[in-house]
Image 1 (spheres, rainbow, N blue to C red):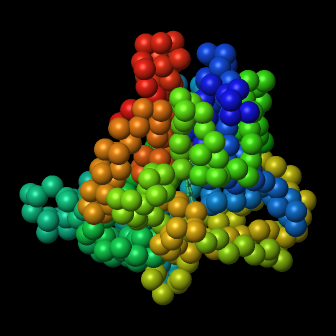
Image 2: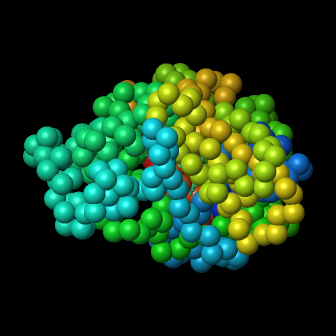
Length: 390
Ligand code: FAD
Ligand code: UDP
């Protein structure tokens, strides 16, 4: 198989599957996709829960959203999307508030009816404690966006549980993921295109990889077959970059999540898909109730499946989920990039391969771009290497 393939793709997540699909269908090349797990889909993998019949997101809840029309159109070639628009809530000191922080959250938290201007004026006043300095880390960015009282209620404790890292060590972009709104609009995302795949995420990957030129082998670890690789075979690697280089430049910080699943003896446990818990005294970050991702389906079970999420540092034997990306991590990552640049047949991609907090649409978008700027030029003789600094 290895000798027949034109390229080896390590990882059947969105980055790997998108490139495999493009290379097979657009260039007519043979692609071998391997994944160390026994299923396709990477962290977006979904399957039916036998006890309740609901679709479970095995590695944590996945919500599709994008403003990138190219990605949206591309993905719609493999799935339809439901009309689901994500809303979330946060429980703080036994009261429930809407997320992301919006005018309803602000009015409810301060116990006042505030107009958009009044609310903005109040938060700007609170954020003035930072002076004119641009926010340099997660804590400062959060205070600049919502002021200290809301930061301490909704962000500080949740972030402490999620990252167990001083929020002054964490990059500001983590919190910039969440919108803050001075309207009562309470959708979690601002993106133009949103929805859940009609038949679940795994069905998307089945379609993407269903091509005669794509061979998918599961339960295969790249490092077991690495010594067997033909010398010039190009490799797309979407696993953790530090693992690729055997941690020689140091370990990168990753976080993982343990999801504690429980079938509840009620058809509806919490009335919504995701409830965050802001208090540090509650050990989990959030509770997900999967059936609410698919309100369009007829769920016959009178039971419901929930998952409590516990976040912790990932060791080498764990599945890395989130890059922590402290300043130290960034320095280590730069050293790996230098090592990668010296490897002609290696293309690093995806959330783990480029150590970036990529959402699904960003992983797909990055793969489409890599196809255009690296893989296609490579296979048509315009580039002599698949490597590229991510
Ligand atoms: P992955 O999906 O991680 O795929 C990499 C694959 O490589 C894995 O299957 C792995 O097994 C395989 N691999 C690694 N090492 C090896 C090896 N040595 N040999 C063989 N195979 C190997 N995005 C959103 O847009 N919306 C969300 O709501 C959302 N929620 C998320 C919630 C959680 C808890 C997590 C962890 C992520 C979430 N994401 C979300 C992000 C989304 O999962 C990623 O954007 C997407 O999975 C990235 O795809 P990828 O191909 O880069 O990586
Ligand atoms: N966050 C928070 N409180 C919340 C939700 C999010 O402080 O109730 C912060 C937290 O630091 C988190 C980040 O915002 O890591 C990004 O949240 P998001 O919901 O995008 O995280 P993900 O879905 O990727 O876990």
